[in-house]
Image (cartoon, rainbow, N blue to C red; front, side):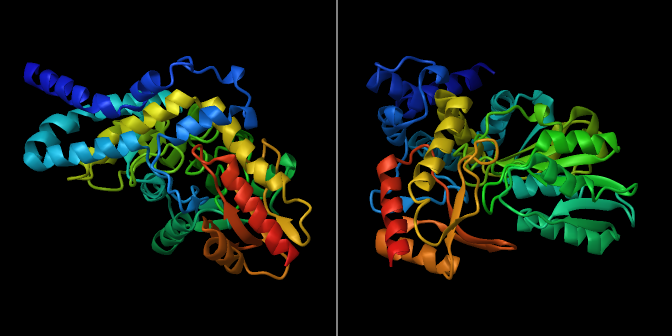
Length: 425
């Protein structure tokens, strides 16, 4: 144990030079720590602060990345730590991986639990939201005829998982259709509750719909479901580390998210949350020697994994905590509205995202009448080197624009200029 403690101290000293919070304290002493989000309005007057946040990232000087909804870049400190841990593990893999780094998953679990506002023994560390949510989709005991309510706007991997469960076990999928964007909470709730029957066992809810950034009233939907004895699985892939909330306050029973999106963790990091009294009822996705135990760690029996990825995640958590959840949410919403408000008068433009902070945050989606999304996205990149993603899903046909905390307003000014040019020509 003493040798291990000495090793950890030496590692911390080596990584201290890349630790973000230490860099900030030395380089920018004028900014007090911890930051108080109530003293900094999330508008253009804060740009000096966000320019310093940008220095934490290796953001491309030639490509404007506005597809952070897919995956976000990790901070420099995270990448340096990942490189260090990889090189260290390569020297004596089984020793450093299994006897050293594997033991440090518990402090990481505690840090994630703090952000999530959850108990430590309700958090499992996975590789992405798909893995976390699949643990629930395939882990619950359903019988033929049991019904699951889900939306046509849920993430494709999850739709396919439920279709596979339907094909394999004979459960019934009941589909919710939506007209989006919507600011009508009663409409959104009724769209789901109208599908509930005595056979409904679970409702799958996407907290923020990835296609257009629509926020769904998760807590109200959960309360309505629980009144009928229905469980709730919440997909938080696009809301965790975006909206400032605590998972238990959402009222769901199960929750999965990716940590390589807005938490900016290394690629291939995710998290599963299960309410404590539900854990023993869920079969682990991969084999475990105690599959019916109440230990959340049964969902981590992956075998050999990338321990460096997990350990480097701690530096991304440092950055998130440095900024603060409330301040981050305000900034992301500000950036979304910054560009949207400046192109509202462009002829033929159509928006698939609400400007209201109750119904959207970072993600914005726009289109043009008579133009295919892929044509718009290609032109943005080929002529302006602005990277976005074309969305053509159900009744949404536009381009998704997703800035992150390192995005500068002058980059969005270039997006505005490009959109206005397309509208004029």
